[in-house]
Each structure stands twice: as structure tokens, then as C-alpha cells.
Image (cartoon, rainbow, N blue to C red; front, side):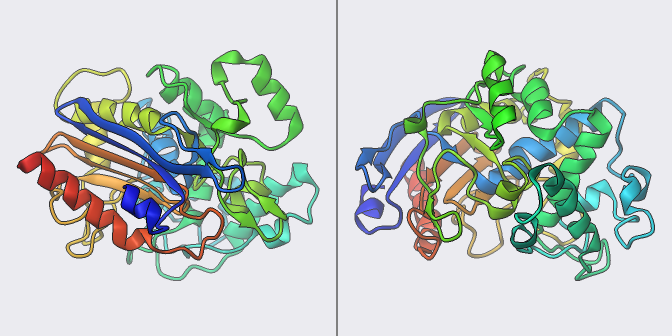
Length: 362
């Protein structure tokens, strides 16, 4: 890890490893912010980027399915009135979760949305997603898609009556006793609301946040607000990005899921439903909300079993969980600080995961 800092794989990172339910390594390395020279700490708060998909959006959908107010086989046209008459109407919730909806990976919708008054931005973003041409027929193949998870956040909102951040907090994080997983809303009114509600713990000491990119259009180093441009444009909360957290908070949520997979009781989610979400369908590598190790070149390295699940985040975050080995690795870094052009983490991730397993097997 220190060699990675010295080699500028990332300015800083926190690595947490747990084995057989016990945290055996949890250490910070390098800098949280280059400009000030602020050191990384174990309780540093990271922009988790696409870890939002499994750790917030997918779990919220799972909770709604558990309550029988939503089905993974439901089509969007039966949930979102605005999707009726479009080619998105027949896309199922399961296809959105598993990235088989046919929607493209990403579109820079923020470029058009930021010129719209703030109260109208979210609705405009969602309409742009509905208008975006599909790149494949629904169910035909897996195309990893942020756009699908923007629609899933909308589904959660319509079915639950709460915005995604509120529902995740009240139904997932608070019951599990996890305070350091949360979304950071950008609009001032919402910040005041969060301050009044102490259980949300949305307003944090800014120095705990890890710096990300020098944003060319925000004209600053982004810190304490979401790095993802599309999520920022709609106020900081969306289904594909916006979640913040510490390595230990990510681990606490993952260990709850691990316990469920091992047959232990937990009030977090129904065990059989979790297993259904984490079961592959077809030839794709992604399950519902989570990724699985590729047959070759996986970021999890060579030793994580085929039963493993994980996810990567654009900002330099990742987790991998292997229920067969009772192993969890959470690697949170600020590799985009100060520029997203730094791609060295791609080679580093499999190396560090291989090293961890090799040490454990000695």
C-alpha cells in the first residue's frame, strides 16, 4: 500500500481486510488532500461513487421486494407513468438491476441539466434517460449502465414515497446501526433539514472528507460533494452515485450480508431474497446490484471464488466479499485526486487482492 502511494497509484487510501468475521487489517496510507498535506485516517469519508449501486439502490429495491410492494419482474410501464409509450416501458426491474436493460453505460446529461432551474433538474434528467435510445434489446446482453440505476432510484421513490437517501437511511443503515454511510445533498434547504435530523448525520466535519478531482467546470477541487457530474446536477442523490462512507461502515454493511449468506439471522433483509439477487442469470458476470469476478483479469485477483461479489467505484473505491473464504476486502482510495487521468489503480487492484489471499494462506 505504501509503495502504491509512492508510485502515485493514488495520493491516499484506506485498506480494511476481515477474515472469519474479524477485522485483521485496517490502516490508512498517504494523503486525503494534496494541497493541504492532510493525512488519510481510518475514519476518512470517501465518495463511494458506484458502490452506491449495490450498497444503497439495490438494497432498497430488495427491501421493497421483501415487503411485496414491488416485484423484480414488474415492468417500468406499470410503475413509472412517464415511461408508458416509450421503449423503456417493457424493461423489468430485474433487467435494470442486472444491467440487461439495453440502456447505454453513460451520457453526460449534466451538460444540459445544469442550465435548468434546480427544482426542475431531477425531472429533466429522468426524461432524458427515458428519451435516450437503447443500445440493445432489453434482456439481450449486459451493458453496465448508470442510466438504469437512475431509473431504479425513481422506482424506489415512487413505490416507497421516500427519496433514495431517506429510504436507505431509515430502512437499511439506521436499523443496522451504521452512521457513516449517507448521501450529501447539495441544495441548502435539504442541508438544513439534515442538520435538524441528528439521526441522519449528513453534515460532517469537512476535514473528514477525502478530496477527489479538480473539476474543470465546477472550477475547484471537489470535496464533501459528489464527484459524479450527473449526480451533482440533480442535487447529490441518485441511484448510480452519491453515497459517502468510511471503510469500516462499508464493512459493517457487508458483514451483515455475509452473515445472512452463512445462514445467521439478521433483520436487515430476507436471506433467500439476498441469495436470489446474488445468483447469476444467463452468461453475464453481474448479478442484481453487484459484480462477480471475471474469469480473467478480475480486479479481485486470482483467488477470490466464483461465489464472490463486489463492485468498483470510479473515484478509486472497491470492495470484494468471498462467502466461501469468509473474506472481505474494502479498498477506498482517492485515485481521481487531482485528475481522473490516473489509471494506475487498474493494475494495482488485482495485485493487492492476490497479496492479501497469499498472506492468509501462508
